[in-house]
Amino acid sequence: AFAVTVNGNAASVSAASVNSLARTVTLTLASPVQNGQAVTASYTDPSSGNDSAAIQDRYGNDAASLAATPVNNLTPPADVTPPVLQSASLTDSTLVLTYSDTSPLDAAHPPALSAFNVKVAGVAVSLTGAPVVNATARTVTLTLANPVLAGQAVTVSYTDPSSGNDAQAVQDSSGNDAQTVLNRVVSNLGTNTSYVMDATTVNYTATGTAALTIQGNALN
Image (cartoon, rainbow, N blue to C red; front, side, top):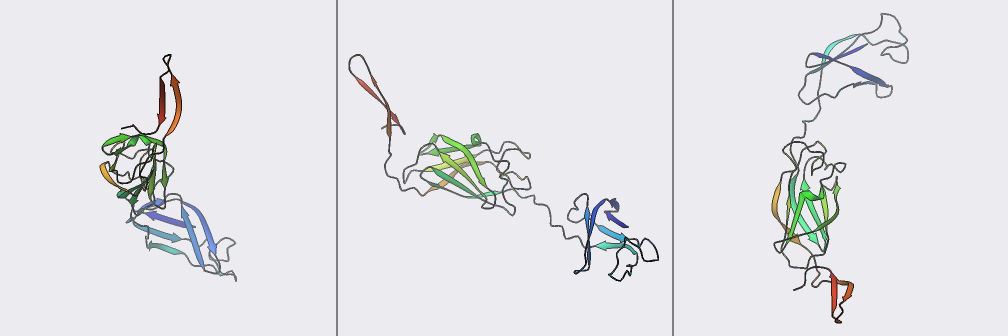
C-alpha cells in the first residue's frame, strides 16, 4: 500500500507500524536515507470499501489514498571530521589522550600499542598492556611499563596506520581516523620524586662477587 522514492528511485519498505493514540504510521526503509536526498511517500487505499488491512480509524473509516508527497528529510549530515587530540596528561604510569569529536570514539576497533611512542626526558620508554578506548569520554589510555618522576619531560607520538579507514586506529564511530601526531607534549601530573626498585636476583661468582639485578629504570 505504501510507495517511497529516494532521489526518484523506488525504496523498499521493510516494515510499517501504527500508533493508534499518536495517530501515526511509521515506515521503516530497508536502506538508510542520506542527508540531502529527496524523499517522497505515497499510500494507496486498497479499495473504496471498509478494508481489513488499511489506514483506518477504530470505526473502520479508511484513509484516502495519498499521492506522492515530499517528505521532510531530517537525516543529519554524515560525520566526516576525524577526532582531534586536545590534550595529553600523565599520572605516574597512566597516560591519557583526550580527543574532541562530534561522534564517540570507536572502542570496538582500538589502535595497536605499536602505533604509539612515548619518550621520557627524550628517551623512548616501554608501554604495556593494550590501549583502552573510552568511547563516550573520547579518551585513549596508555600504560607505561614504569612510572615517571614528577617534573620529567614527556612526549607522545601516534602514527595513523594509513590514509584510509583502518580496522585498528584511533577513530570515531563513523570510521574517521585521527591524524598522526608527533612528539605532543604531555602534561606530567605525577607526584613521585623517587623510584621504588625491586631486587629480583643476586648472582654470585666463584670469587665471591655478588651481581645484583634490579627491576626498574636504568641506574645513574
